[in-house]
Image 1 (tube, rainbow, N blue to C red):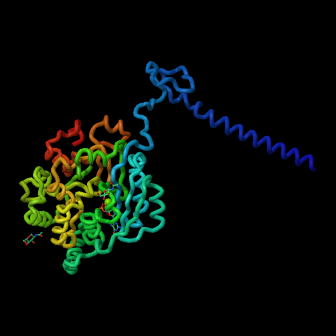
Image 2 (image 1 turned 90 degrees about the horizontal axis):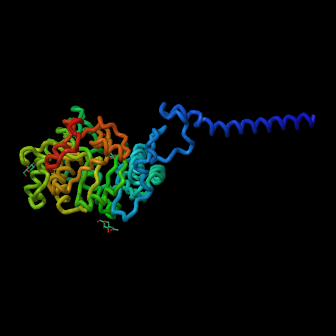
Image 3 (image 1 turned 135 degrees about the vertical axis):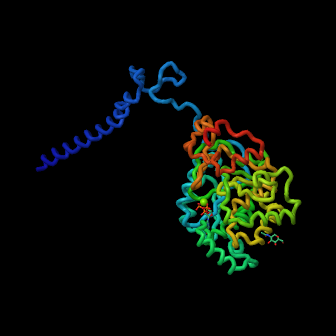
Length: 402
Ligand SMILES: Nc1nc2c(ncn2[C@@H]2O[C@H](COP(=O)(O)OP(=O)(O)OP(=O)(O)O)[C@@H](O)[C@H]2O)c(=O)[nH]1
Ligand SMILES: *[C@@H]1O[C@H](CO)[C@@H](O)[C@H](O)[C@H]1NC(C)=O
Ligand SMILES: *[C@@H]1O[C@H](CO)[C@@H](O)[C@H](O)[C@H]1NC(C)=O
Ligand SMILES: [Mg+2]
């Protein structure tokens, strides 16, 4: 009996050894067994296993050697700017903002490690904080919005506002019946840059849930803004939905009449108006992406502008978005050279894509957007108008993308 057991144990041990041996040998032989199927017919003689010197161009390589553009270092040298990412979000936005963070980190921030400020009208929960802190390479900060920045101001007539929401709902205007969307637009227009957590910074990059970045960004975009005297920037521009802003331009005209000192010479009026300022053409920079200067938003000029629009009531009696509000401010109160188009930041926010024009750039920066999706030269984009306003030549090859 004891002998049979020892015999059985011996057989099991031998079997395990055989299985182990099989795995070790197959894991190293499988790839080399497949190797010949990748080689071109010209390269009949199998090349030695460690691939030949990539500089030896006389031989057709079996695979495309990836010796162009090594991966950038994990951390870029040099000083950091006084800058942060900023996101307004609800706890329920966690998994969509997680995707955005991953894109921003992979394409940019893992090299720079900038901070990230999260703002919410409610308290962020532990899960939101835990997950986002794990994803961001810089410091993360979580702020609750003071209630007086997220409520109806006392000068707003509640009944009138409620009636408008009812009407907009019937007209099926997107977010037309939403109160929270209006608070969000007003907050992004006039308050986020004044949140105590934001006072510590001079520059911001706004990120929304579910966005994507498609190319590597290997330089410090904040430093670029500072060194080139830029105050505001965009990647996508388009026409605003007229029904959300019927009296916005009148309110702007009231403001510029009351405060002509805030309107700058050499501004981008040509981008905003086709008749020298009489009417608004509805062009705006899409503000779900922004890299900008917080001190400009905190300036007397911008605050006077926001207060004037706020008292006109259109955030509640209409549905003014922060995109036209920011864009008109940048268009009238900044010199046109102070607004930058980041052609090199490939970006998606449903439903539009900015994919840089020019194949050479896209390949060099490992872009993964389909150039056919680029919105820039579409008839509904205002980006061609931006180029014309600034007397800039459009990027080579843009005609082919129209
Ligand atoms: N804390 C908080 N954040 C909000 C609220 N509504 C919207 N946001 C955030 O404000 C930003 C803009 O809201 P979105 O819902 O993306 O609005 P949108 O970009 O016009 O529309 P979408 O096409 O739905 O993306 C996002 O960062 C949202 O997470 C809210 O009620 N509370
Ligand atoms: C960053 O900018 C803010 C706002 O301009 C300023 O108050 C703060 O002192 C700056 N911090 C540093 C370290 O320069
Ligand atoms: C602009 O000012 C005029 C005169 O004060 C006022 O009647 C009008 O309602 C204002 N328009 C807006 C949109 O605020
Ligand atoms: Mg959004």
